[in-house]
Image (cartoon, rainbow, N blue to C red; front, side, top):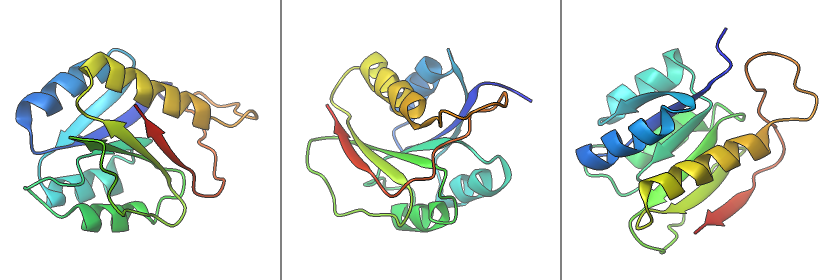
Length: 142
C-alpha cells in the first residue's frame, strides 16, 4: 500500500488544475476531475484523502460533490477560492479549509500539505495516514 496521500483536484480551470496537480504530485498521488460525474466516481472508487474544490466551478455542481463528501468523515476538503470571500459552505463532519487562489501554486500546495499533515492522528501506525475524525474544523489559509 502506498504511503503517499491521495488528492483529488476538482476545477474547471484546465491550467490551474494541471499546475496544482504537478505541484502536489511531488509528494502525493493526484487525480483530477472536471465534471461532477468524474469527481463523484473518483470519490467513491479511488477514495482520496483530500479534495481541492473550486466551489464556484462552471462544469458541475459543487454541492453535489460536498454531499458525496459528507459520507466520508475522514475526507479533508480544501476550497480553492478566486478571492477572499468565504461562501456559506458547510459539511457535517469534514475538515473544511478555504485557500486563497490568488496566491502562487507552490504556496497553495504547501497549505494543502500542511493541512494534511496536521490531520494525521498521533496513533498512526500504518503506511497510509489515518486522518483524524474529530468535529468539523474550519480554517482560512491565506
